[in-house]
Structures are given as structure tokens and as C-alpha cells.
Image (cartoon, rainbow, N blue to C red; front, side, top):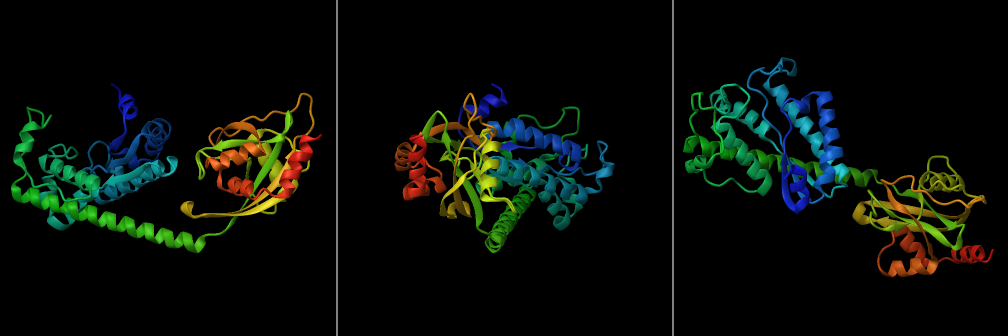
Amino acid sequence: PTVADLLQERQWDFVVINDHTQSPVRPERKQQSMDVLRNSYIPLLRNTTTVIFIQTAAYKSPVKESEDLGGFDKFTEGLWQGYQEYAALVQAASHNSIQAKIAPVGLAYQYVKKYHGEDLWAKLYFSDDFHPSPHGTWLEACVLYCTMVGQPPPTYNPDWWKTARYMQPPEEDQLPLPTDEDAALLSNVAWKLCQEQEKHKRSLVADQEIKLQKQAVVRVGVGVLVTDPSSPNKVFCGIRKGSHGAGKLALPGGHLEMFESWEDCACREVLEECNLELQTPLFGHVTNDPMPDEKKHYVTIFMMGECKVTNPPQKPRNMEPEKCEGWKSYTWDELKSLRQQGKLFGPLDRLVQESPKAITEFLNKSDNK
């Protein structure tokens, strides 16, 4: 089976990914990797709970035409930044449905060099100065284990190497396996570093929460009840995609822009989303729509409008398929029934619940034309 087959055939707790070592620090290659992530991998990761990116180790020396990437420390920091961008892309493109973590292998190599000396650090590399030695492989395995499980690595057992799929080219001098002492030290480095990274991550999340709370503002949304020319007692709605309220039925609409009138906003949004031109829309109702789970709060202005008369009558087109599954018209009673089933987007749910007189009269009037 292909990788695509494996990713789609079942629910995966973890998928582990790493890039070519230099790609995350070279802008053009990093962008290529991000495009592949966005367009090829993320659509295949829908059955995945967590993606773990392995931040590979920087080269020990400037091999493989890496002289321009700076020394080991600069190379390591560039790798860490690149993998943070990869992880952020997965979180954003999946709307946080996939958790993205980084196994900080490169930072672990850097930690060994800084705190345990260059002799042990040099032992982490094969003779080519970029592939891992048995010492480096053990450190990488420990970092991945800690990142994945959130616990210290198990006690080192030299017998594990007997089942290794591949060690070193047979013509090369075989490097020594880690001693129990070295293995324990590297295991402790992995656990300590992963704990520090998790603590730092929690601190960043807490700081971001405080920042969002301080910066949080109530936004103004505009929803538009557009009557169906072929069934004037019905209004167009579509199922949301890719944003808060995904999977719920909503009216066309969006954010009120700076200095924009309610009428202009209604006409603009309906044209952008449905390719429908409206006659002058009228104010219908306003709702207060706090969304604490999404950390959002809206005041929604509902406008009422009819399509301009054309021959043949206008029909909606789904102009933003990444945001909406398509447009279909519903009676007010049908919307009431869907509300009982929990299928309406928050502001529309509240509007149907309140059933303001201006809205029901508008629909009855349209039906009687």
C-alpha cells in the first residue's frame, strides 16, 4: 500500500514526519515543503489525532554544501524555526482538528554539546558528520518517545539493537553502541528537554490566552435573508465549512467592514458568496451572539432582501466552495425544525428562536406577491 492508502485506511493516533535536513532553513525549499503539506498531506491526515515533526539535527560540520547555513548553533535554530512553521501550518489548515507537535531532536543535540561537552556530542554522529550514530539514534528515539508519550524513556536495553533493520554500511568501521552510562545520560537529556519544551509551550498558550482576552473585541456580523425567486417564502442557506460553526446551516453574510453601511455589506456579501444581486435590503433584526467555546463574540445584524428581477430568475451559485457546501432554500418552518435538531449556526439559531415579527412578516409578504 502507498502512504496515502495507509493514512486513509484507519484512524491513526500519531503520524511522524520529517523533512530533508536543509529544507526548513532554505526559504524556497521550505515553501515547497509547506505547499506539499498544505495540498497533499493535510487532506490525507483527517484520520490523524497528532502529527509529530522530527526536528532533525544540524550537521556536525559544513558538509553537503551547507557552508552558507552558518555553524551548528545557527543551523539548529533555523531548523527549529522551520519546523515551528510546519506545525503552525498543520494546526491552522486543519482548524486545530489535528494536533501538531515537534520532537526537538536538533535541540537535544545542541543541549548535549552545550552541557555535556563536544566529545559526547561528536559521538552522536556517524563518520559522515550528518547521519546519526547509535548514540544519536538512541537520543532521537528517546526524544520521540517523550514527545509522543509524555513520559520518561524506558530503561536502556542493548539487546534492542539486535532487531535493528539497518545499522551502518558493512564496509565502514562499526561505531560502538552506547554504554549504559551514556544511554542513561542521553535518556535524561531527552526527558529534561521535552519537559522544558512542554512547559514553554504551556506558558506561551497561557500568554496567548491573556493577550486574546485583553485584545478581544465584539465584532459585527451581517446575515442576509435572501428570498428564493422561485419560492418566495423560502430563504437561501448553506452549510458552513472551514471556520467556526462548520457543519451548521447558515445564511449568507460576513463581517461589516469599516465605514460600510449595513445595506452595502448585505449586497456585497450575497454577491460574493451566492452571485446574486439584491434589491435594496431592509433591516430585520439584531442578535447578541457570544461564542465562548470559539472565544468569539458577535453582534449580528440581519438584513432582508429580494433578488433583482431578471429573466430567467437569478439562481445562487456557490462562489466560495471552501467556505460553504452549497446553497439551498428553506421555509421558516423548515428552519424551526432544523433548529430542534441542533443543525443551525449560532446566530441563525438565535434568530429562529426569537422569530421576530419583522422577519416573519417579510416572508409572508414575499409569499403573497
